[in-house]
Image (cartoon, rainbow, N blue to C red; front, side, top):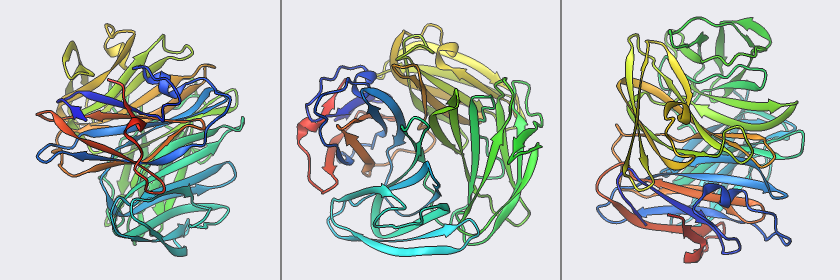
Length: 482
């Protein structure tokens, strides 16, 4: 593995049963085959060479049914952790899954418990992860054995660091499993601050759930306010919150638990909105994220979860464009930039290619205090080639909140969306290993890894692909695309 500064290294995971080309869609929309092989599930370890910085990265997980891609979700590479808390929603067509991998050479004991919506703990237990093994299961199944219906949180702690991931599964009206990545919060820490800006799409096709998770063992409370963050700045906006039309609502989250606000606006316009979470005096801020569900003709087609992110003046993200957006098999990246400050901010946008070379494509926008823009990358860069993969770098005169969303119309014209991980250049890259805690191939599953080196010089190292049983899979399992 060799990744030059600000360049991309794409890897497809395969067992040699399909033919891959450099295009991303080939790995995710492959045609149906007669004898579908059993899925291979596991995790990937990214090990930098001594003295080399660790690349950033993401895994794009996809699942195809009868040869048609029905869901995909982006999962950022992550370091190991010894604790975590995740929102749990298990109710009919909705379920929550957890992935835990032990990359170490010793057994790891993972203790866990659930907390319901009132703050009452239940379902305490523990499991042992043997060396190099991984578990990926729904929380109402073994070994966690949660209730058939649950709303609240799941908290775990481990005797040694593990790689962890949480996923939401929504079985839609057609029977397809729509999967999205859920944020994993560190137990005991408070939220990011008093103002959390999350893009909010309020049209007849988009439905929003705002989830507030209490990472502490004390109640938290405050007010959630909704604003129309147009190019002219914040303006109070009335939306339908849990069935009531209002521009603000009080929240109260019991210890270790979560609460949810269902947001709907039966308007045809696409509002550029932001959500302000203001803790009460003496209360810490909860951790927040929003899940957007896209529906067409009464059919849920995609979901994506966007968590509150740290404001920064220098971030970058992976972007991709292919085909005429809105047509079958087309791909585009959407960008939301929110200015939480009182004063206007000038934003510079630049694009580099997969090889790290500057394309010469630049754009500049000015966002007023409290304002926000939502644009497709092709609207910002009209000269972008019809097929493109690269890195978008966002720099500003002030700290901004940035969100990226990948939008992919599959071969039957359904819109699939997923949040794109961001990398903050103000946080120095580390030199420790990072992990993709869950990859899956064959049997309808596909995975594509993208590695990004945000620093100089070239980053070098190795990728290790382990099965759930801890078996190191052969070199041919990882296929470099470029």
